[in-house]
Image 1 (cartoon, rainbow over the protein chains, first blue to last red):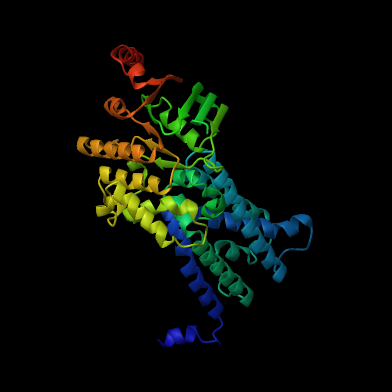
Image 2 (spheres, helix red, strand yellow; image 1 turned 60 degrees about the vertical axis):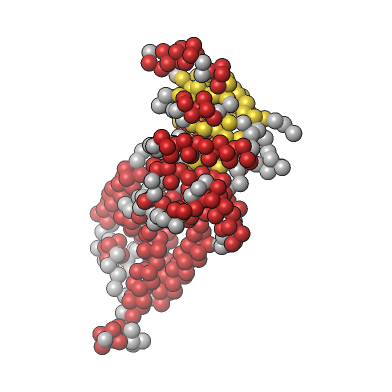
Length: 199
Length: 238
């Protein structure tokens, strides 16, 4: 009990990390259940890896474009990492959804390929970059100890977005997951399709 | 009012660029009972999926006559084995999906619609087991729930993909009698995919027999007479 009180104490240095973990712990299962129902659990492995690759690409961009030395540039580096992660994840989801709709190969094969390609790109980018060891590895591996207030706010906003999406599109997501054919005949795929792709 | 509900003109269907059926032209009359016959892989399900808009036709044209100015509403009954048992949904919850097309995102299902779904379950004789988990129902019970779900969509046409596959004889007869009764009561257009010639002979008016990329179309009397059957069977086994 004493430990718990210490963790939630406003003066505790890592309290934002605890709050963020709680939000992630509450939000991920809500979305994850649809991945399990749609037999897309490998998405949970492939997407974080693709997101990491997005971070690696975003962090490498300033170096490639000659915008500075790239190591520890504080807020700018941070913003680049988030943008890279979001862009890579959304692009990957759209490409995977497109291939799914075109019935190209098996979903496990597509996800496995995406995972392997993303991992290879990350490793190549790290090995090509002389200063990659300076903090990047922790970011790419997700070993984050301290969380800023902005990150906590962003996580809270994402959590609220997930809750709102599930609330608004629950019927549609359930229908598309359970019986896509019926969803098409009821013309329910256009509004919910994107969200289900995210799931 | 046009008596035809669906018209196919020189239709070629298939997956990607591979044609399964070519040059298919036919008209399906409003309120008719049509049976789709053919061996495995003959294109029955492909034709059904094309009609439902799941796969685009490779060539030709499908015309669907609007009903009261709105697009045709399909009630689709898939094979009962198509569903993942991992879902913890009751029969009622599965049947309730039929009304989702009329309810916007973020809105609860109104009690009037729930009552309508109960009526559909009653009409298909599925009311007694509607509270049980869908995955635990028998084949015949699942089919009744799925037909109730299709009825809940308030369909203009009912498309059934082998609704009695894997169902015992008694349940098959009960399901088919129920479909026939609903067809006569509501005058839905029914398109039934089946392998069962006995059922076709008993219930269907028009028969579409698919074989090696082509279709033979005729009435039960025209197509299911001994001479034609012998000819078709010879073709099937050749």
